[in-house]
Length: 166
Image: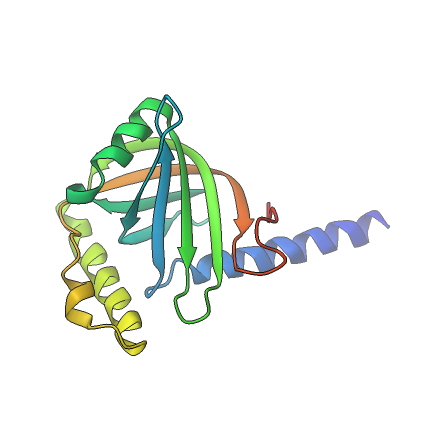
């Protein structure tokens, strides 16, 4: 029975990792939420997302021009939530955790961030939104926020929204 349980756990982990990797691909909408020390929420659009191989640490890129309140909140509380959604299907996950580092994104990261913005513009363009309006979003310079993931939730609209995935 224990072997069966371990096998099931391994299969579930593999399926979850496969799903998580889908949100690391281009064309994803990313929103970052934070809270101030006095519990006032703030959010901003992120442009890009990366993760380590184990999917335990993510780096989210937020535009300097629109993320001052978000970065100030992270500095005060270290708490952060990131929602990633596929615009065509509304398939959405959210992860929460503690910020390990906030830094100005390096020059060599600019192509990655710009490419993700263009892919997001293409995704929304395919849905009828003007690509140029999405492509004009502030995106560089950007802050890179490294997050140690503590919790993962299903957020796709429907009966499982809010269910813990890990």
